[in-house]
Length: 387
Ligand SMILES: Cc1ncc(COP(=O)(O)O)c(C=O)c1O
Image 1: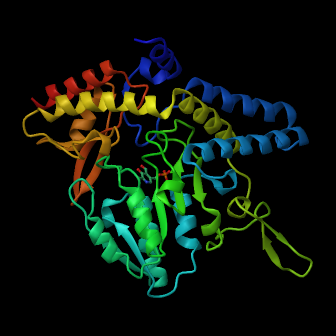
Image 2: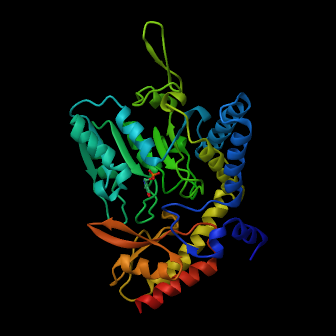
Image 3: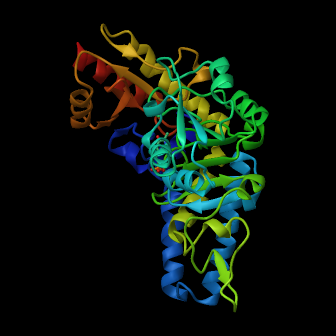
């Protein structure tokens, strides 16, 4: 094991106890993040949480966090809104546009999207009479760009995940962004399964809105994430919540929203979470996304090689590893929840997820702190159970 791998293992306490491969749900935090959260709480306890010195510190912390997020996805710091989760960010986008009855929205795969990026649009269709157009997909979740060109005609927005939570497939977002721009449609991206595991460039993608959590592949604490809203698109979006942190009221009762990003951040934020996420981002970016991806794909490759050879097992997602993340999904003759339970009894944490058509599959989501040995052990347990 290299010095770096050894250090990573020490930083992730989970590796001493179990083989945790449910990072597509929530990833553990490194020790430096735990320390950053604790230090922040101590600072609040000692200096007063809203004393001048602490609030100056909070302001610089949030600036620092937004700067790091901006660096991660290639945008301006002011285009980063701090939210609780992907769901919150996507809802800001879905509910903020001035929809008219009969407007159309294109959604990749309908129910094949994570519900966080489906239900807000379905709800809009119920409340505002917006038409949902479902982009047909294949088994991996891909679609035909020609179909998209036809479906997007006259639509106001297209939405899809960057990487899929169920098959791990990476969507061709640069092409989609180009088609969206050519058709004057807004482009919304759910990056819950990509931020922290593959590179993101919102400018290259031509994306207007993007949301992701800090607590999956970025290894931050729960309850904090980011919503990217391009400056241009922010002019088309009305805040749906309002409070002292996001707007002012004139003597004549005129409400004036603050600029970006404050206009979408009504109320105080999750400051301990921000301290944690800032430390996690520093950690992940110090390892480097290229290295993270290499390690992730190594573990995923081991899992796919072994599990894919088990009789009656079916692997999902593209064979080409450049087209998928480290998510490895499979079905077998044994029910996925039974297999997940059996693995859990042996200290191996996978998950069971929808794979489309009402079917569930077993999902392993290894991250950079999972060693090759862990992947080999987990795969051999799966093999033994299914034998
Ligand atoms: C693709 C995708 N989108 C959204 C979500 C929901 O994320 P959050 O809890 O940040 O709202 C998930 C969670 O697993 C996901 O995989």
